[in-house]
Amino acid sequence: MSKTKSAFFCQNCGHETPKWLGKCPSCQEWNTFVEEILEKTTKHVVSFSKETKASKPLLIQEVEQGEESRITLKDFELNRVMGGGIVLGSISLLGGDPGIGKSTLLLQLAIKEKLKVLYVSGEESDQQIRMRAERLGLENDRCYLLTETNLQQILIQANEVQPQLLVIDSIQTLHTNTIESSPGSVAQVRECTSNLLRFAKQTNIPVFLIGHITKDGTIAGPKVLEHMVDTVLQFEGDRHHIYRLLRSIKNRFGSTNELGIYSMQGQGLVPVENPSEVLVSGNEDLSGVAVASMVDGIRPILIEVQALVSSAAYGTPQRSSTGFDVKRLNMLLAVLEKRCGFRLAAKDVFLNIAGGIKVDDPAIDLAVSMAILSSNADLAIPKTVSFAAEIGLSGELRPVNRLEQRLSELEKMGYEKIIVSSYSKGIEKKHKHIQIVPCAKIEEVVRAVFA
Image (cartoon, rainbow, N blue to C red; front, side):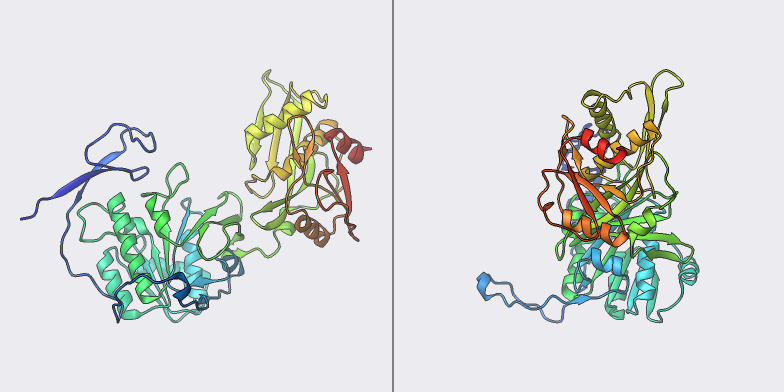
């Protein structure tokens, strides 16, 4: 009788150790190690390839180069984020907060793309999935449902159905008989993903996995899970707003700088073709509102920055920000106080990025500062003016990248003027429909906007 082997795994990062530790040496978290039994068995493994070729080394020049086979999707947002479609034999991981729309997005993919799909759910029953499918619109008569958590049974059914796409909802609910541990543990997640990866490569069937996330926002399970898959997608957004962001964190077959935007409607997730049009309100002139030209990945987007400055009523001034880093907001307020002479230390400052979008592009620094100054002076910024510049600690305007793409988006939306750094490259070029105003200091921007 073989001896049972066990090990201790960190439930936060997946670090493995032969004995229990109070503190994880990898992620520095306390009391996260759990013992898991690793019993190596010689159970029958389902084979999916018709032919087994022996591996041998080849010169890189001898490798046959063929065209990359992709499945082009009707969902143009997901199609762009995936790099032009789903690559055959690839395995993709989709993560996000509970209720953000992960299952809805993949169920739409299963019933609206006219593909032969096997949708495996370990969290919902057949009736629950049918109810959601009716709300989204039953359009695919080749979508098969399977409510199963045993990986061996799932692979046997997938081998019989031979779908064009396999969807697993979710990877944390699956378990394999080769390991004696509970579903969702580090060992189970790693082993199930390894078997699904082998299935995808041998059958050339793409696989989509839904992954849970921890309270820190990272995908639950071992870090090796993200290394094993070909594509990692992150679904973001505020559940109190209708917009959802789909980011590509890792993509072996395309760019990791793509961004997809969806609108959560009653009939499901609707792709947003022109996000600048819906994120900018276009209301009448109001103080404290500035339009910034940002780039998320390689996609230019116009966003509306709203600020409210008022006298501190309770002594200590408040600094509140939604969708923008609070520490960077405090830094910009210190620059305006020290370098430009604006007295904001005794005032409350509230900042909001309209639409529930979280922004980390430094090019919106100038728009944030001008929205704060506009609210402080109660002077409205003209609706046809936009901003794109980073602010340094000495109050200078620093150039930003992809200026041509920002200008093209502004021209398409009908803006007449953009204020940029005088150190930006390419500002000497003339544009027919938009005026470029170069400035070196933030004081010059104030004079140019408020005259």
